[in-house]
Length: 264
Image 1 (cartoon, rainbow, N blue to C red):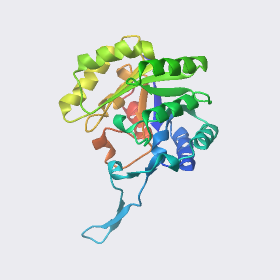
Image 2: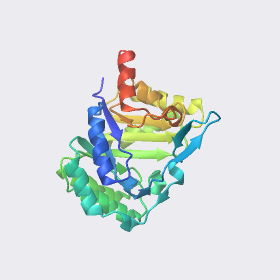
Image 3: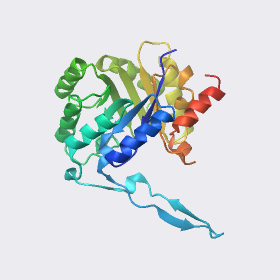
Image 4: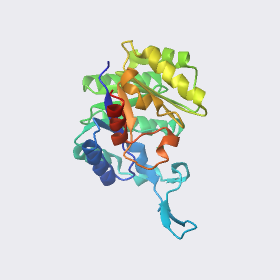
């Protein structure tokens, strides 16, 4: 069985909150954290107070896809990177996701790549380099990461789910470009979720380190059963609301409890 780590993807929208979230994630059972640097540009609104028919009130947060994204100047990039790297004591992965890959970075691709380049000069253990980065630029980033002994995640994010065979083939072909291959897609029906499960099972006895997951109902199946699917990293969250299961996400404590209950 491959060594399996739980990585909490940090969802805060300010530097101080992200440092605090990383500390709480470590205490909650995370082996590592993902610094989602692009989230620092999100403008998190105040929750709406709603009242039910019995007069009880609760807070409801709008969907992230409706949140405003600030201009590039909103974040002091170098200072933010320094504060995050110095303040986060856990093993850390650095990610800055563009809007075309489901992220929130408001700048150009050249500006995004410059941030990734700057991150490689800092004390991080992992960096996420999307599969669609220009080949010549990727070679430069990979060389810098290798020189700094920083592990590379080759990631791909899709708006729909391909067939299991196509996913497994892509993962195998991408293995030479990094230390771990990550595939994530949107789930629209149970068949999509089963494609992710089958792809994982097809890869489990191979030499490729991979992480496969979905967003949507059933997307958490590969996270829940990761120990018997040969996965190397499971991405989790610190969020606890019931709606997580509909998003295909899972809380870090819940995934640990599930593995213990299932005797993984």
